[in-house]
Length: 244
View (spheres, rainbow, N blue to C red):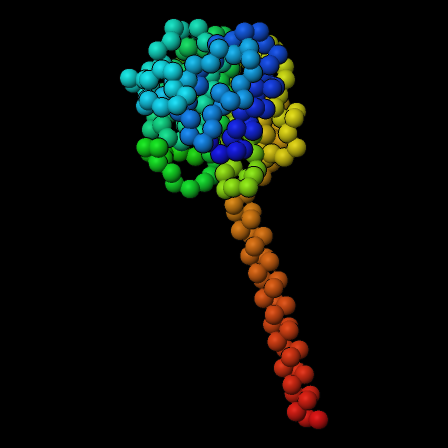
């Protein structure tokens, strides 16, 4: 798990979870690979890590990656960070998350919006600003009145990852039970969406990688012009010297 993903997880816990009483939480894709959200979870959390392979941080090994071995409406929180890009059919996992959550239960999703091809054991997807809304459409089509409380993309921090974050609630009619938002604590983000608001916050239709590419291209163009001007100045000085 890259550092920004860990930071995002802590902000989620601080915003939504610390204010709650004792809660049962399931992490999907919990194997500790360079860090785990378990490390930053508050003390009121009963933490259950699930994955389809044995490893550090894994409490339950899934026989089927698309079936969660928990009763319907029995879980308060589900979190998944740097995992959904590796799920060939993540929408089926989402269905299972919605099934197991209590009506006011939350699902915190952190998934890459860009980044290199990295197989654990496959690498299939990247997530853009409308991804959470699409998953809610899917949930409603399959019988769950889900909603998105907020979603946004975070900037790169000392690496090449832009994280896409979304907080879902199983029953949108319970949204008032979770009034706080991560967006209230962030200084930098793009394409933020907040439940009850139609306006996109800090909209940017270009990924950070492309914006940086354009900036570098403009810088190269500026430096090229300066170099050509310097060459002309040097050539002019040479000509003036030869005439003298």
